[in-house]
Image: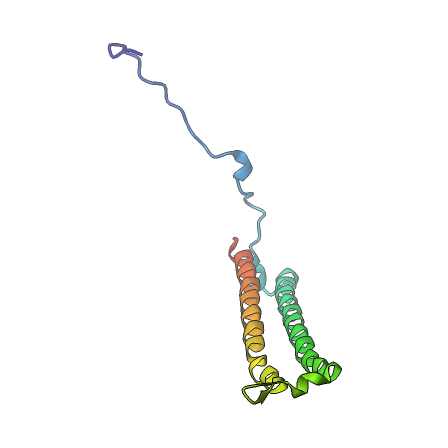
Length: 128
C-alpha cells in the first residue's frame, strides 16, 4: 500500500483456538463436591488418604528392610565384629552413625513425596 491510498488497513481478529475452550454449564468443581460431602468428594478425599498411606507404608517398609539388614549382615559375616576404627568396633559405627543418615533420608523422601501428593490433590481441587 502506498501512503496516498485512501483505504484503511484491513483489521484481523485474533482468537484462541476452540480446542482450549472450557466446557461451561455442566461442570461441577471438586471443591464444591467436597464441601457438599457428596460421594464424589468423599472419593477424592479417600484417594488422597490412600495415596498417603501407600507412601507411608513403602517408606517405612524400605526403612525396616535396611534397618533389619544391618544385624543380619553382622550375623552372616561375624568377622566384621573384630574390625575396629580408632578403637571403635564397626558394628557400633554402623548402628550409631549409619542409622541417622538413613532416618534423615527416609524423612526427606517421605516429606517430598507427601507434599507432591498434596500438591496434586490441591491442583485438582483448585481446578474449578
